[in-house]
Amino acid sequence: MKIQKLTIENRPRVYALLQNAFPGSAYEAVLVQKLHENGRTLHEWACLHSNKAIAYIAFSHAYEGKEICGLHLAPMAVAPDFQKQGVGSELLRFALRQEEIKNQPLYVLGEPGYYKRFGFEPCTLPVCPFDPDNTHFLSMRNSVTTSFVVGYEPEFKTAALPPGKQGKKRRAR
Image 1 (cartoon, rainbow, N blue to C red):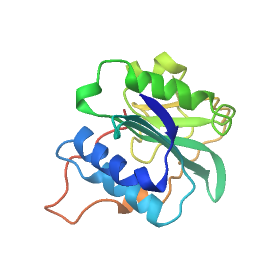
Image 2: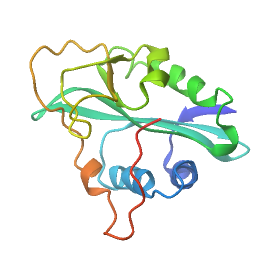
Image 3: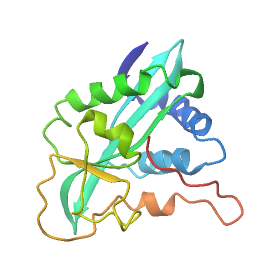
Image 4: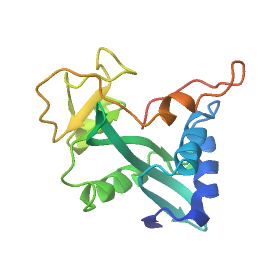
């Protein structure tokens, strides 16, 4: 098992992993593909095993208006055959130690019980547009004291497929 920065050559492996890790939903794979196609700045790593992507994590910009105010962790995925074996935890710990991540305010929309183990805490500010009550919105190194709706890259809204083709949208995990 090897963790490495995602390369262009490994992108198709990650798209396949995202399809496999989120059955019934094309949202995550389409999202990452659109982020790549549109040249968005992503901090992303893949865990490779036997020439397959078995885990993936990405961070994209978080915005207060037009200003970058941190990073969003999304998506994070582990191949079903490797879930519940610590692969996702190892990948997340690795990513949190990386220079481009370790001092940034971080946000994640996900399962609080999982992300709290890594230092994420429930937050009331900023407000997540996909979870207005911030029930599943957590942060790390968040010093926000004014209310605003945190912005995502536009692909998070436009990655949806046409009606009838959509799978259920799922939170990062």
